[in-house]
Length: 71
Image (cartoon, rainbow, N blue to C red; front, side, top):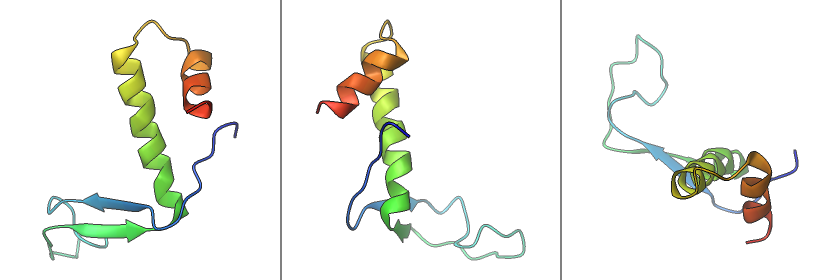
């Protein structure tokens, strides 16, 4: 990939709508469930792309990539 998002202690969370395991037989629900690790950076960068696209709908994918890579 051209854009990577390495990091340390990158956190992602999801709400009570999902169980901690995601299995149908798991009926537990917790207020927030945290995942930690560098693989959690992918949703964060995807969110950044969404925010940039919303703010600049006329930007091409190359322009968005350039904005991310130069900030």
